[in-house]
Length: 368
Image (cartoon, rainbow, N blue to C red; front, side):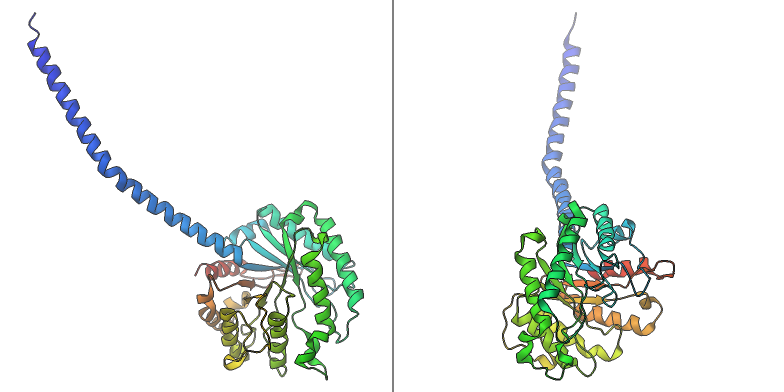
């Protein structure tokens, strides 16, 4: 039988395979790196975005109001869906109405149960979220019974830790709810005597306990959010903040309230707060350093302020937007922010409108 035609067909087929294989190698050789490079760029961009979001959320916080407000009224609790909506935030401060929830009445106010409820919601939302829990407030007498108050705060902390149980692992520290050092209002106010003021002495003891006691089991951070100053005592208020921030090691983080959102006359506060955060020391008006010494142990941040009034009050909207424009460049390495965003409302009384929209404004700020 003549086999030549079959050999020719085999040779032709082998040649086609060789050419196809060669072309395939050529395409893979030059196109695969391009495809992989494009994929790598896309993955790197996604990783970068995720890293930025992670770094951002690790630094910035939101205040969640819990428990009693006034006599017989309570804040509406938060829901996991609302915390999930805040996808730029992984740290929360459980805040209180500091006129209602005091160290001498926290048991009858069931403050520990209220804090526990909010912590549970946070943990249920994401067990990796972190929490600063509020201490009860105290009266603002110029002369406090320091040792007695300290013992009462220690009892509160121990009781709170027992109540939270395994959820204590999510607690990183404590928030001090009194928003000013009240010594400035007394007749004998003197910057040089602030160290002898009973409120400062109480804070020194609480800070030492929180940072060094085995009782707190890792919850060693201590934070404060004072208002920068307004009214006739504005300069003295700023001096007390400067003393606490620059000349003591009481707090790890201090988030200063500009107060401008609520008071059109407080626009003057924006520049010195900006200077303070940028330089890590408290500044007064005109670039004036306030404190005599600078230990550089306390990180300075800003308490951003917004509520439903942003959507109904032109003045509030303009003042919030001006505050954002002033501080947005501090987002990043220098900036540390927390957010006051009001509450959801009061149980059986009223619901705050635009709450979801407020959450969206917080996200918008943190991703600028």
